[in-house]
Image (tube, rainbow, N blue to C red; front, side):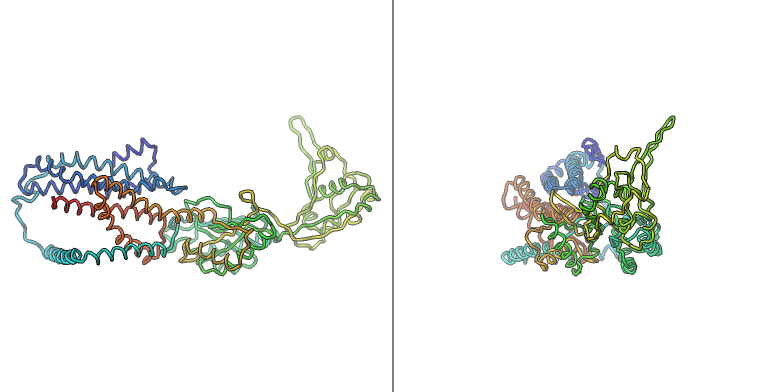
Length: 612
């Protein structure tokens, strides 16, 4: 381990979770080589051989075995070095750290361990002239259990040697069972983490007012704060979308709460649904998230098209279809199609009769609904801009357009009159098509409020309203809409992928609307496609390394024949305990390959030595 720290220092690695995991795993691997050398040396000493001769002979006899075990173990992790994407960058440090520790262990086991055996082992402790103590009850029981197990193993071994075709058929069936189980096991990315923090995005009607949004926010905060697992709650409204907001929740320390983050979300979800007119999508905060678009839910599926109308229509249909899938929950989209847009249509003939131009109307609208710099005040040290704007209550409703006055003689317009305050219009998302006037026209201008020079805008223009998109999203240069979702309890990312494919097929989406996973879901899909190739690559590399060491094409196959049965046990364990085949499980499979083939190598080397 000390030598591994030196390698990590030279390579610029830090002592983080991945390198610590590699060192922890290496602790179990590095002692194996020394145990093999020590056990063989002790056997020779127990037979009466001199300690120095026993150490030299013991290391010589098992040197090839230790070399085969170590090199094939390093070969297992070579495919991890070529894993793509961010997971590859993460586990490259793990693979190199573990490989370095195994290589250093190989050198020490064949040099330092024999030296210490020759110096420190005692022949009496090795088994010569040692006075036997009476065996206890537990010792006698374990010896009988061992002898019984050995007897069963001997009989099964005799049967296997006498039934070669049957054993080979069973091996082929186990290989096929591995393939089927791998296809059936739920696939994931990284295991869900309980970081003690939750966040969530809020979505309300796009025409909701600020006061209404604040009231609903307080209702949500009160519900969340009443949960016994919640410590603090912070929420705010606004952001990049109308009727939106965000919430951040800190849970109590794990020792003070019984449930994890997902259980808390599941408990809060039905209570939060009672608040009408707003939706809150809660997600557990994860230390690792693979990019993606900003969304209210954790995972994203993005639709792209060259036609905005088709994109909006089919994104809505897909979201509705996804709500019917049991594997998905918290369905949301980033579409904002329900805004209200006001149109001002100028009667050019009427405007011309009043001596007005389009620029006059444009400036009047900007004065009424924008911020106009009308003067600059200078003092000895500073200068101050004088900005004119209407009082908020006179510019929040589209009905205020009827009270805008336009100068007929080119003078500057006055803001809407107080009559607009009586308007009961409740729309909160209003877009008015107007451009600010030039800076030269506004600086130092005089506001003309004479009634004889100001003409109501309604006399020269008509007003209309229509639904409008509050935003138009793009991705890769194309129009895009993202449907975000969370996983239902007991569902995996592979289940979610199948559910989205089923939902897309059920609505018969046209060819000009294309969908793909984004962010963490896309990385998980890529990882799922790579997993079989990585496992196959590890097996091929082991075969090549063992083939070179044994100078045989058959013996490596004998070693690898032990893997299928171990693989069945690994996948069945995941399925029994309801766990996904994630990246961490993949690392476990690589470690399993290293452990299983190590035992096979020792048995084969012993058999070859006995054969010689």
